Length: 248
Image (cartoon, rainbow, N blue to C red; front, side, top):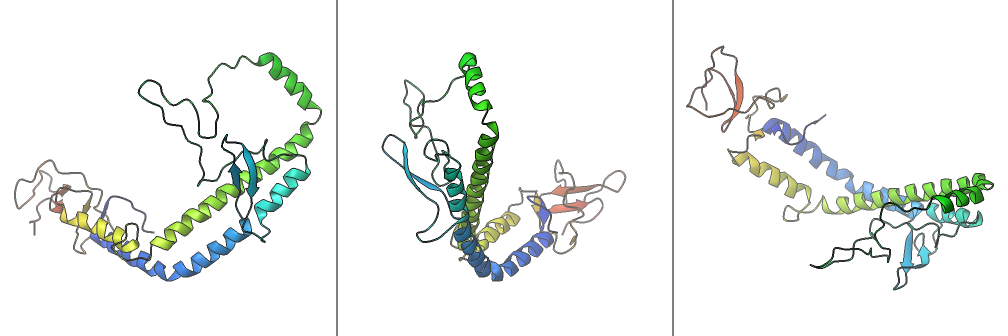
């Protein structure tokens, strides 16, 4: 349904616009549902000292028991230390390169870590650590499974926030960048650009979009297009043209 992106005609776009506007009535309910789901899942937000070391973390609003909070409690009960072992960040708090200058490129990350290089040359100590970990591998696997659950829950929490941000903008007026009416108006403006042949105003003649992927014509010779076999269909500056039909 409405399975198109940048190539379409007016009939298809009008159907999409009508459908999208009809969905606006569900926005309030979706916002309420996502807000409740956010409160259930929670979030993981670390606080850092000036050197980039984590010193505390939150898993949700005060007084709320969240899914991520329960995972973090289980992680600590099994012996994991989130300040040392679970260094994860939400989408809203990314690690980035510190700015370099004209003499040297960026070499330090915002969390205080230098950019790593290839060729660690650590095989002897790596083998020893592997043997040290070996007898407790099953327990470490449990910690790693919880780590993966925490990371997936953080990703889910970020996705909920992204959707919530979108839904707060979509119902606004056409003057607001990102609102549905703004986006529809922006796309509609391309129908007035004759040189933009990806879309065309079919004036209701091709409601199923059968002709939208016709090849581009190389030139527009006149008011009538006639091919040698009488079967050519092309996209011109005047929309889709079928051989032998007069342009209107």
